Length: 187
Image 1 (cartoon, rainbow, N blue to C red):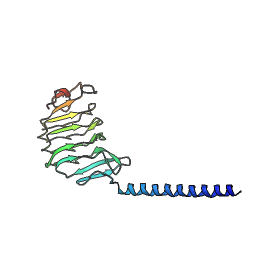
Image 2: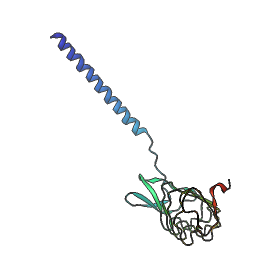
Image 3: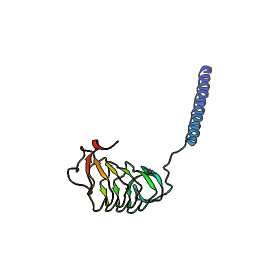
């Protein structure tokens, strides 16, 4: 009987210590999590609206190098809205997110300082006059299938358009500009 009682006391002591160790590890993990820095997209200079499951960029006043984030508030940026960057003359470089699928009417109209642009593979729609007046735009690389063609897309932009020959829709004129396969892109 004494042995059984001793065994029960020893087991309860061991289990009690194990629970305390687990709590200490849990507290340590919580402490580490609070010390971790959560990296969020820098959205200063952007105005946007949430569309339930995605984000629409509605305005951008940033200048210099502009990187449109993939996500804002944990939602994918899928649309550059109508007139969002209209007349942003100070923007010299533009990086569009891979999550993008639509560029609105006159979205980049008059952005005279952009020289090169890469259109992500999921973009299926580019609006009327989206890049009109981008007089500095020399090259545009399309990574996906040809988007819907629209009027005046590249009006007054001296751009040459480069496409991936393995993608669909590049067998006909597009945007009223010269089309070349990606392997002819100047390095």
